[in-house]
Every structure is written in structure tokens, then in C-alpha cells.
Length: 139
Image 1 (cartoon, rainbow, N blue to C red):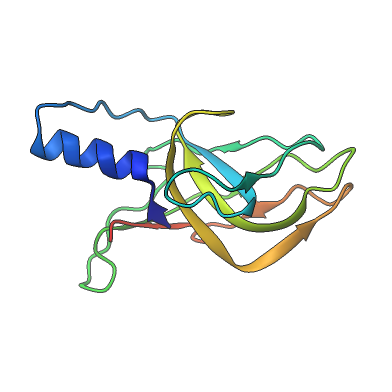
Image 2: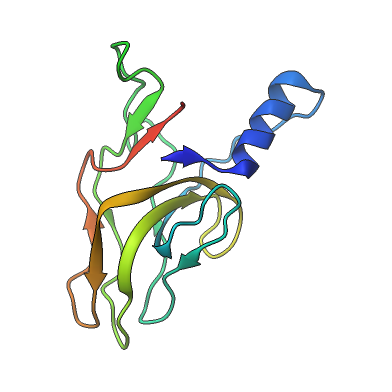
């Protein structure tokens, strides 16, 4: 996953200028039909009982930074991330995911494309990401 323009701006202004940035712990994972990119554009799934899945920033939810030169600055989900089951409408071909600081709007923090798009249809089981399948890298 890559960092959004919002997150990059907050980090730079916190580290290099007088601005402070308080860390919030609430995190919501989103599904997208088109990548949200750095500027939070793109098309998020909507309708059919879709809602972002909450997985807060916490040591029990995300792994510690890697210990080798090849995975430093990396964290993976330590618990499954599960969305509501689609109901009443198809969600479409999901191609990307995002991490936000709000359940419905807010600021995009990170985003990434799925290795393989997944078609999610009305009546399918609740979609989920298994443990270790979401990787956030500080690169």
C-alpha cells in the first residue's frame, strides 16, 4: 500500500515544520472499483449493504515493523478484516483497497491495488482479507 497525499503532507509538516499531528487510532478499510490513488479519488463500493470494515491501529491488530532489511517499515494485519455480506445489490469488480480515519468519509491514509480483482455479487458470503494479507509499507 502507498501513502496518500494527505498522510504524506501530515508527516512532512509534523517532522519538518511547526505543525503537530495527533495520531488517531480508529482505522477503516475500504473496497474500491477503481484505485483511490494519492489524492483519494477513485470509486469506492457503494450500496448493497456495503460498509467499511474497522481495524484500529493497535499492536493486537497490526504486526511490528519487520526485522530484516527487506521488510523494515512494514506492518501486516494480525486479524482477519471482514466486511458485511453484500445484500440487495452487486458490489462489482473490486480492484483496490484503502485505509481511512473515518467510517464513511474522512481522510485516506493508504491505498493499494489487489493482485487479482474480485467480483462481489449480491448474496455472496461476507468478503474478508485473511491474516497477513494487507501489508502497509513505509517506502
